[in-house]
Length: 367
Image 1 (cartoon, helix red, strand yellow):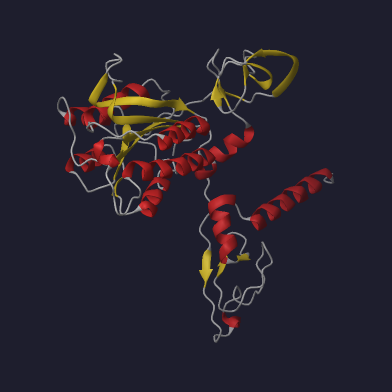
Image 2 (cartoon, one colour):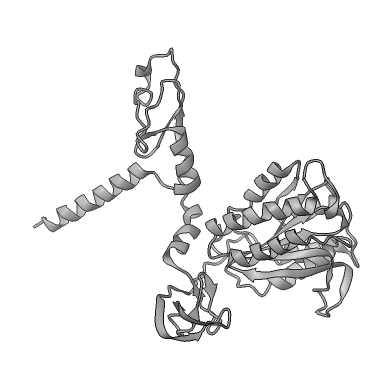
């Protein structure tokens, strides 16, 4: 799975998005806007060194030819690629205040713009497109299947979330590019399908061979404070504090980002740790179902009454979860917290540290 992702959200804001829906209230556009706000926060929480952008599809300014003109079925890079979630959340807040849904949806124009945005991105990152489609038709100027073949050749993974019903061309796009297709039933289902996009997809293989391993240069900039103000590279504003690029000493006010002077990827240590957590997932714990009537002596895990993490007193009928590595027993709440947030077993970590300290002590006393 990829560590650095380049994800583009293609959001259908045509006339169909403004329609009232009994399952997506108050409208498809505002419901998907609310879901995207929470999803973007969760996305950067689990993929902090990835980049995200938002494309509007409908009656927008033409982003294909570069000529500033309003077209009825166009695509526009509404929120540029960025590693800062606040940039996208502010844009969505502006749309929520004054929603504008007009024109027709064009799958071909959206694909062409997505390819133009994602292809200049570095080859070591994944190229993903998430379509949120409200329309039941696509107003295309040419053959949309030609654009789909080009997206497949460029190894762009396209997933489609249909807010109304299934259409052949959207499912065809998802199947050809190894993406995910789903028809949304309600707002909860929309959030669940978006959450499926939080985990990085498997790295695609080209010609039956795995992608070549690449060494990526990254910088861990220190936070510096100076008495005199200096110009921030990312916002062109004077500031006295910021992060200094270890290569060119250019100052930036937030991480992660790419240096605007030398192009070095700037991250912090906890960003790297959160980005690689999906490469080493915590194994599933083994459930042990108890009963008020059955004797606990047959299963040693059922005889334990305290959770190894929170020391909660578990009842005989409560389900216990045992770690397959250290055989420690946890309650259901701690099991969910470890797999969803913590991503490690506290007892395995504590015993591992104790063994490491013991090995170090034995090495120090070894003649």
